[in-house]
Amino acid sequence: MLKSPKLYYLFIVIGAVIAIYANAKEQQNVLVLIFGIMVLMFGLFKVQSTIPSKKEKESFVESEIIDEEE
Image 1: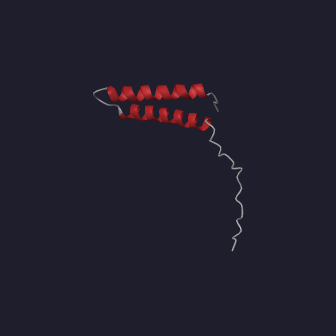
Image 2: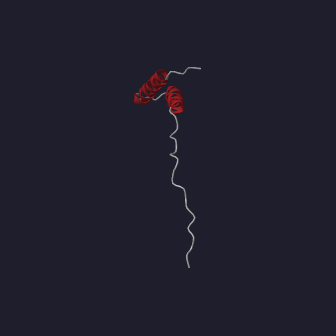
Image 3: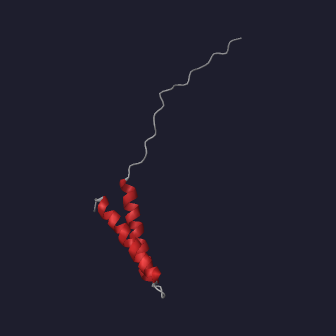
């Protein structure tokens, strides 16, 4: 499938414009609004999947066993 994040950003913009256009009219077209939201969400999902997850830092401090002195 498509791998270019720039294309996914374009999907986000197109979906947002379609959704705003469908919502701006006095007589709202629900199908166009749903289609715009679907394109927007598809773009967001694909952009999110291209962002790598944050790696957790490894701790170099090891716990020491403390002997109880009596």
